[in-house]
Length: 469
Image (cartoon, rainbow, N blue to C red):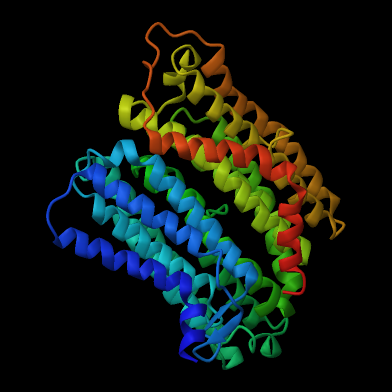
């Protein structure tokens, strides 16, 4: 029994051990930032590698905590994303005063996400969600000398508090009508009763804030712009990925009796999220705000895949988030380096960038092509699987409008590429010396963008784990 406990909680326990090691490191003798970053990146790699060995399926704490092969893969994707973000943050963190505190905040947030993904109970889900959100608000304010960073943290706290209120209200109504907090027992007590539908809408509204679905997206661009690039990367990829990972099984299982209702909700939200995200992305000059609205549009495509209510829908979401990790982090990796070493974050600053930084130019271009869905990048296959899954419902208006919006997105992604390769600049960003750690992360991201889509067994494996769940 004790052995099973440690195996099922293996990934959470490894992160907890890293947190304690960092606390001891903080209390010990002073070390250089370079040595701390080397130690932390090694520990994060060990954490990533450990996730692929010795896992098993099961539940503990009276089904409050559960794990299976698909959940393990989801956590490994988040571990990979966090390790890549850590590598990319090297140039910024090596001159920062509070390196260990940065990792303590994000590791605590990641731990909360893991508990949320493994939750089999509404209470465990909410505790994991709050544990993941509160440290992120503090991390958004990590550039203490910048007013924008403090403003980003304040907006995130206010929006998170509001969304948590809606979520808790929804949870209380779900518990009131069902008499249970366990996801497995809730469906037997739900029906198309107006009170049950209200409970779902309140619950889903709280989740929609976390994934920045329109009209619950208003905090996103300001927080992305004000937060440090590393925190923005974490919010864009890890935080949203974790919430989407847990949203799919909750809709497919706990709220399955209300499938007709939540399909209509997803239909409307997917369309307005894609359209609004695209329209506002066109207007942006700051690259972090640009990628904020890009990520909003991507959430719309994910909602199309979720609407399938099938194993293909689940597999397409997990596969797309894996692709999104490589694509978005490749773009943010370049932005992070340029921001840390040159202090530039606007699209106009990247004019003539290719003349001085060809390697970084090609990395961000490949990333933008993948985000746009240009073949043969993995982003094309990711969106293709999402649309094919959504098409199984036979609502071709939804698929058609989503596909047309992919064409619209080409404009604003290619606008950045045009600035990099075609526009001239009398004072382009000077040549940037890329440290080893960020360079490694960029190589991994580019390889992931190219190979993940072409290696069909990746999607097939995820689909095999999704079938029957």
